[in-house]
Image 1: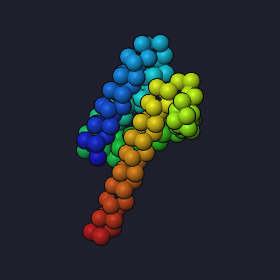
Image 2: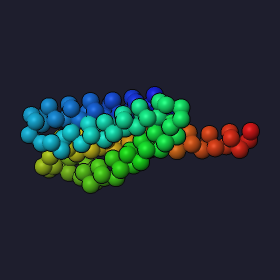
Image 3: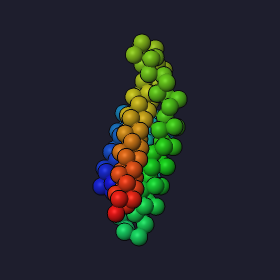
Image 4: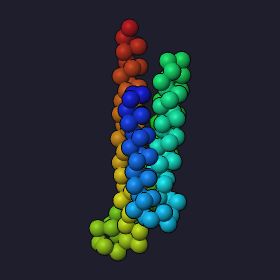
Length: 123
């Protein structure tokens, strides 16, 4: 899980930086995925220590949940993007990517916790 957390954080930072560059630096909000990714990378660093692994991964999942919830407003505008009437299409695309990555990470993380709990109960 720590490796996946690191990969997700790095990917979100890269997406945020690319979105900022594409927006010609005109909007700091284009960096939101980078901020979320940065927090997830910090959580991955915490999780890399065996004594705080559980805490780091739980914190990363909370950050991913907040990232997904924060992007829902723009994800709801995907119909406007398809119709070609969106005011800020890049923001919608970036939000959809953030949402999908965060939700996928949440699913994998929760499944990992369930498998771990079952394995401990069986032992």
